[in-house]
Each structure stands twice: as structure tokens, then as C-alpha cells.
Amino acid sequence: GAGVSQSPRYKVAKRGQDVALRCDPISGHVSLFWYQQALGQGPEFLTYFQNEAQLDKSGLPSDRFFAERPEGSVSTLKIQRTQQEDSAVYLCASSPSGPNTGELFFGEGSRLTVL
Amino acid sequence: QKEVEQDPGPLSVPEGAIVSLNCTYSNSAFQYFMWYRQYSRKGPELLMYTYSSGNKEDGRFTAQVDKSSKYISLFIRDSQPSDSATYLCAMRAAGDGNKLVFGAGTILRVKS
Image 1 (spheres, helix red, strand yellow):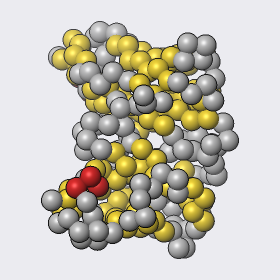
Image 2 (image 1 turned 135 degrees about the vertical axis):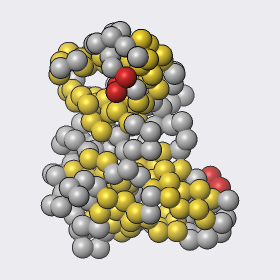
Image 3 (image 1 turned 180 degrees about the horizontal axis):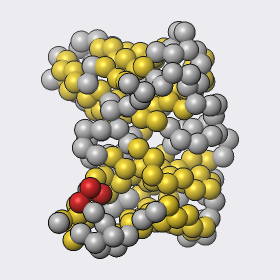
């Protein structure tokens, strides 16, 4: 499809497990973002890539969270030693141009439940 | 206190009603204001994008920004059952990349 694709859509993990969430942005989009959306809340910024460079990771809640985009297209968000408070929907968004420009195109999200 | 405050609702209206959704914010550096619509188990999609103060109209949707009051609104005319969704306001400061700060979202239900 032409939109942002995320996988898996649903992930259940036991506390302490590592998880990896994948984002396939719209082809040719330079900018890629990860947001975390807790139940009943708005999305909160995690990190931002321009091509393969991670320009802002100020929103990552702890050093258990790690994101990469090695070839400037697909990105992976990894969460190590998952905790119950990590349960949320993780949204990926892409934008066709650099920072300080307009629309973000969001994927449908990966819903993580940590038991 | 959060930077962006938004009443979570739910807001329930009859079909055809005019809907008013609002957000207040505290950061005077915010200059770009957006409204996103999010259907259940879907990602947010952009509805309206405005810069600084003023009004913007697009079909049944009108966005208003009052920077002096730090208050933004989204009006939906002739509301339809298909408008039932969560509406998220979002904003960012100039030069802050695309790091958006979202409100918590207002759940809207339009009854036929």
C-alpha cells in the first residue's frame, strides 16, 4: 500500500522480554517519527530521524528504548526488558520533507501489552 | 499541568448539529496548530493545519486560533455519524522540527 506500514499490529510480551517494532514509511519520505500513545491520551513524541540520522531522541523515556533507521527507510523501535508501563500504542509517522514543515502521515500503530 | 489541555468528553450530538471542539495551551512559543482525527484502532489523520492566529475553513470544518488567549477551536458543521471519532489538537513551536505536542483528544459521537 501507499501508507505507513507498521508491524506487528499487536504484541503481547511478558515483563522483562525484549520487543522490536517495525515501521515502513511512505516511499521517499525523508523524515520519520515515533510517538507513544497511552490509553486515553494523545500521542507523545519519542524520537525523530531525518534520513538515517537520529536528530532528536529527547522523548525516549529510558535507556531501555532504542530506535534505528540504518538505511534511511525502514525503522525499528526496540524496547529492552519491557515493563508494564511500556504498554501503549506505538505510532510511526513519516513526512516527505525535512523538519519544520507540514503534514505527518501516521501508521495504524503497534499495540504493545506487557503482562 | 500539561502544556496542552483538551476536554476528553465524550461529546454526544445529534446528526446535523454544529460541533465545537477546543484546546488551551500554555506555551506561548507554539505557532503551528493542527487538528487530527483518529478513528478507533487507527492512526491520526490530519484535518486542519493553521499558522499563528486566525481562521481557516475547509468544507464543513473551520479551525480558529486565538494566540492572545492561547485557545484553539475546531468547528464541524452539519455533523455526520461518520464524524464519530477522537479529535486531537496538536501544536509545535517554530524551529522545533516536527515535534508535535498533542492534547489528550476529545471523543465525539454523532447520533443518527
